[in-house]
Length: 268
Image (tube, rainbow, N blue to C red; front, top):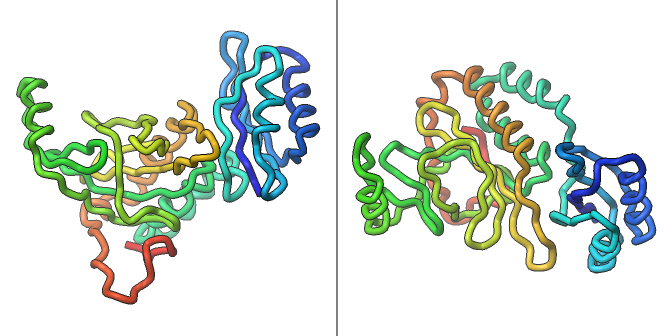
């Protein structure tokens, strides 16, 4: 199986090679390395590795943690090796080639770019706030005291934000931590799911990208560079798709016997 391993290590000659050797000794076959950050003498690298099916990862984690100055930030299952940033331009070219399907193209493609499990586009109106466990409706007016707004949030009736398009493997019920006010950011849900959220800047649309929590593996949060990448793609797609986003609608509820959400959905 494929694993994504995020490691923080000293940014000095030889450190990367030592980590690579440790991964090899543990039984991992490296297929990709991505440098996320180099700052203040430290680096954060993502390794995509082939790991023997059925083998526990404790040996892998223990070997890396035993290295001086090395910290394991996350190990999680990956569907495939994340696509390099050069693919972003190709994705936007596909969106521009068929803007009517642009939202679906973006949602379907982004998970592969970031070693994520799923993505969906939701509409969050101005009078809604997304909270842990549900979306809560509340009237938020400019100039209203924050304490009053938060009090209204606690008392508001739960509702579900309209899902305009969901990728394969997306859950049927969306659970997000509080997003007030909304901006591009990384978040962690109450169940341990890791999220990257980015607003389109129009029509209340928000792209949600997620790495599902795993009881056996520590799933890494989205790094700042990953959030920035999602935000840039969303802003560019919003410009290309334009007014079509304003009229995008949630799909008609499926009748009994229709395919579940875990299978690829039709485009909006």
